[in-house]
Structure formats: structure tokens, C-alpha cells
Image 1: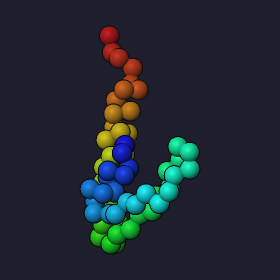
Image 2 (image 1 turned 120 degrees about the vertical axis):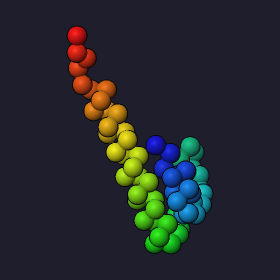
Image 3 (image 1 turned 90 degrees about the vertical axis):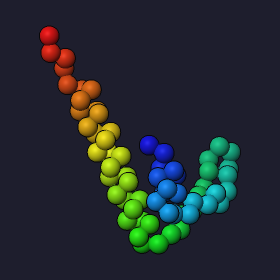
Amino acid sequence: MDIVKLATDSGLLVVLDGMIGKTEYRSVQGSLAALERFADAVGKQMATHTHCAKRDAQPQRK
């Protein structure tokens, strides 16, 4: 799941504040409506991944 893409697609502004080595430090700003869209998008992604994980974990019938 690309959390930064979900945030920007939801209307949140994601800013790279700094970088130390390979670690990025970011801040996120936006409206409450954008935060709600982000939460919905994350929930949908989690449901999709959970559904796929459950499907893949089920034993194959012979």
C-alpha cells in the first residue's frame, strides 16, 4: 500500500521536511474532509488486502 499516494489522492498535502541517511521525514496537512477521504481509502485498501490474504490462506480443495 502506497500510503503517500493515498494521502495525496485524498487531497492531503505531503511535504518532505528532511532526510537523514535513507530515512525521510514528512509532514501532512489538509482539511478534515481530506482526512476522512484518506481514512476511507485506507479502509478500502485494508479490506482488499485482508480479503486477498484470507483467500490465499485457504487450503486448496482436491
